[in-house]
Image (cartoon, rainbow, N blue to C red; front, side):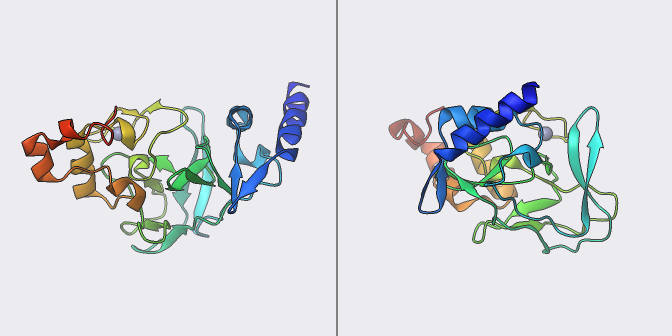
Length: 216
Ligand SMILES: [Zn+2]
């Protein structure tokens, strides 16, 4: 009953949906309703998602929810997911950022990993690619902070890696030092690169002169 009501409201909100340059302009209300969906397949049919690599499969865990594992070998460099789903103007629970204020609707099941992800973003194409060989049974993971500026929902990371950043809510909330460290470790989306300080800037306190870029 409740789901029916929610669905009707979603359909109504989608009727008024405007697209500018191929990006659906999401209102706060629609963002809120979409984030109530327990699964991206519950989204109105106007929203399309990208397909995953054929050697990946969804699994379900009571504690962590949906996740994605390899059923067969995926070699380093292979494309895991292309950013070809519907583009939206606000971050959703099931989206991945691909530019300033542009997000692509995704499957929402590739888990976050702070230190040792099996996948990374290609900064040029925004494809998600295998960062190493992914063996059967291994999870597809990537570091959300390499693509997301300000996430719609923060969460506590459970990657258990040495160097885990614990509360994950977006690149925006990292300290200048953390931004530099992440940039040195993993490929970072191009639109986030402008918010990475140079090592010199860190040493000379130049960051204090430019507080806009480092507004926490
Ligand atoms: Zn972590």
